[in-house]
Length: 609
Ligand code: AGP
Image 1 (tube, helix red, strand yellow):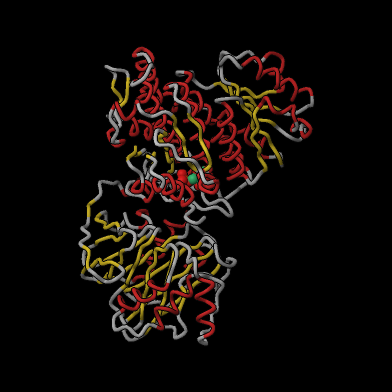
Image 2 (cartoon, helix red, strand yellow; image 1 turned 45 degrees about the vertical axis):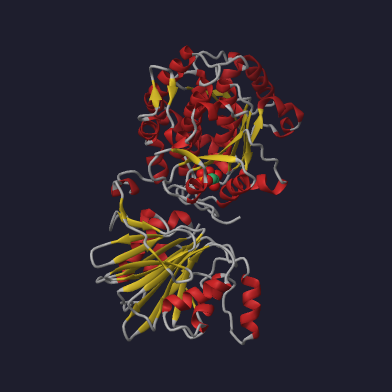
């Protein structure tokens, strides 16, 4: 959560930092701030509760300085107000710190500083770092920051300015990403590539426990004990335009529409038509290793967990290996039994979600094998896993995940194929699924073409304060994801239920004010599903049915707005059925004039427990 930017070079820092913060706002957007330094004039700081555009408006005319740091915040310690916004200063006003992560021993350090007579002005954990740096009597800024970090327990990506050292920024990383951008006689730093790519694609990913000094002429990296590391810069093959919304009115819409091309990238070079299987070199597992897998356990959070449920069902069905999914945020707190012949699969768009990262660490600490299905290359989860599959969905900026989830499902399909084809899955079935995956981008286009038809449906759903999303077996995680997307962007109460469970309780809530969105794939359960829809219709509950052309909805249809999606292989139903639910959520939110890309109280990546 939260975003960090920093700049040192020949240009005025503030405009560059504001531009970078604007690109990081999806990571946290309840407050923002900047600090700049100019030789002889000391530190200038402006910060406030609110968005980056409010910060820009509030900057004094004279806010000059060619060295600076900035932050956009998602509150963890203390409410979102001007004082708690970053940067935080030490008591002398010489030191400014921006920080992502959590200082676990902040309370103890605050008490200690207070005993020493330091007046702490904010409720944040970060402020202690500024005071510790300011109170260090070391000679260099590097040594001051190093001394401060020796006192700190927790996670951090942080950047420090000091008026006594006006040519540099010192940064440190431990559990919260920081990337240095190498420019021409200028250096940038950010917590996310999105803030760097407009200036440079030559970057240095800092490792945990590593620090760096940035000056206009270059960078140096070292460990927290100040011993040098030799971290080289890489030039990334990325298109800076992929980080812009372009002509789209929101990132969420852009990213929904990008699903076909994202899937093409996920499957590229990974399908084997001849043997009806997939090749996932990054797994680092040969046929014997794959055959030795007796169980699969998927770990993820939020929507990644729901797609994980879809993926576990797919693996169980295709590979006939018992598989299930669990919320990574709960997993390690129940002292899980880690089995040597279980394959653990961590699934995450950002690769930063701390609950998922901690679950991976728990698995590996106990000797389990964990692979990752991750979008962001080089992210913490990707690096922590034994191997894995990069999803190649491209950058996803909207807080509500769409294209990354679709590529996660495709990642599971590729994994299920490989696991299945070293077992009893026939070559014919393998080839059928390979062909289905090849058709998937075109079918996603068709599902997205339902958009115009869905707009009035979404606008009707937007009127309801409370909705149900229901499905059975493979339709249930689809319903969960549909409800999740709807609540994230509309702020309406949307609850997912198994269709079969309605009559065991929730039916009591159905009346003409409570619509139900029902997922009814064309499968052996379709008739039973339609039966349950009659129970809703009999209670005058408005119904939206997401289904296939072959399903006979009978007379329930006169109370139903029916949506046909194209038919691919049944194993790919879940992801195609999810697309109309994304569109419904999006257009309902648009009708309600919600801030679709930055829903209230949420952030793109959740790097705190
Ligand atoms: C998705 O729309 C949500 N914003 C959220 O549930 C997300 O999927 C979850 O926080 C996990 O994120 P990750 O994929 O980056 O790990």
